[in-house]
Amino acid sequence: MSVPEKQNLKILFISLFLPRKTASHAGGRHVFWLLQSLAQRHEIHLVTRLEQGEEPYLQELENICTTVTTYSYPAVEKRNAVESMRLAANYLGFSRFADRFIRQQSFDLIQVEWVETGLFIFRHGAPMVLDAHDVITKPAERRAAAATGISRVLAWLVWQVVKRLEQAIVRRYDCVTTLSEFDRSYMRSLSPQVPVSVVPVPAGLDISSKQYAVRPRTLLFFASYKHRFVNVAAALWFHHEVLPLVRQTCADARFVIAGYGPPEALTGLATADPLTEVTGFVDDMDRCYKEAEIFVAPIRTGGGIIVKVLDALAAGRPVVTTTFGNEGVGATPGEHLLVADTPADFAAAVVYLLLHPEQAHALGAKGQEFVRLRYGQETIIRQVEETYQKLANKRCSGKTEEL
Image (cartoon, rainbow, N blue to C red; front, top):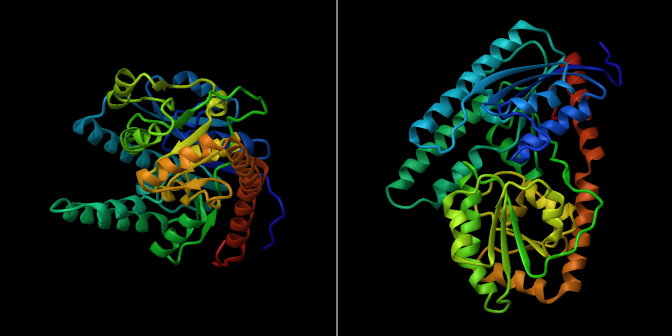
C-alpha cells in the first residue's frame, strides 16, 4: 500500500502541561508552537492537564485545535512532601485518563508530550510518537554519580527504577523524538530497538527584530524557578561562587535573575545585594534578553536542550554556560559561545567579555547565525512533518528501520 507524499492528518496531542504562548516554562511554549504550526495543515486535537487559574488560556488553544479536553488539578503555591505526592498521583491519573480517551476515538497519529505522560498510555491502532522533552534517566544517573555516603545507595536505586520505567515506556512507541543528538544517542543506549529521531526546539520564539539599548555590565540568567530546583541552584551557585570573582575586576557587575516563581532563597539576594535584581515573571522576554550585556547559564545538571541558551543566542547575546548547558545545544565553544565549568573559569570568561566588547559582539553574532541555521522555525516544522510522513510510510509498509 502506498502513501501520498503529503497527507492532512487527524492528530491527537497529549500534553502533561497546558500549552501556552506565554507559558512559564519552555516546554509549554514549544508545544503551543507545534500545535499552532501543524494546525495550518492538519486537524489537531488536544488532551491536557489544566491547573486551577489557567482557564483564561484555553481560548487561544480552542482557536487552534478542533477539540480541547482537559484534566483539572488544583494550584499549589508551595510544594511540600504531601503536595509532591499528590502531584505525582495527578500525573498518573492524567496518564490513565488520556489512555481511556484514545480508546474512544480514531486518530491518524498520536503524539505524547513528556516521557512521564506515557506511563499508563499503551499501544493503540494509530502510529504513536513520544516527544521526550528530557531523557529522564540521564539526570537520575548523574545525581547517582555525584551522591556520596549513604545517600549514594538511595540515588543509585532511584536511577535504576527511573531507567527501567523509561525503557518500558519508550518501547510502546513507533517513534521517539528527542531535542538533541546527545539525547538521541543516550536514548538509543537505553533502548536500541526503539526508532529515535531528533526534532529540536525552535530558537527565539519570543525574540523579535527590535533593538534595545544594552544595560552596561548586566549579567542575565533567565529561567523558570517555581518547582525547578536545578534553576534555583544554578542562580545561587553563580551568585555565591562566580559573581564575587567577577566583581574583583568589574566591581559594578549587575546580576539579573529573571523568570517565573523565584523562591525566597533568590528574592533574598536582592535585599542583601543592591547590584542583584530578581524580577519575577517577565512580560517582554525579548527586551529582557537584549538589554543584558551577557547571558549566563550556569547549568550544573544536564537535562536535555537548554532553551534559554537558544533564546539568548537568537537574541544575539554573548553566552557563557557550562558543558551541561551546551550539551543539547551543540554550539562550538569559543566560536558560538563560551563554556566553563569551574567558578574561576566561568568568572574569567565573563570578565573577558565585559572587558572586550568587540569580541563579545562578534561572539553574539556568530551564535545568532548558528541558531538561525540549525534551530529556525521553518527547519524544525519541516523535520516534524518529515518524521510523521516516514512513520506513516513505515506503518503502511511494515518496515522497522530507524527513522
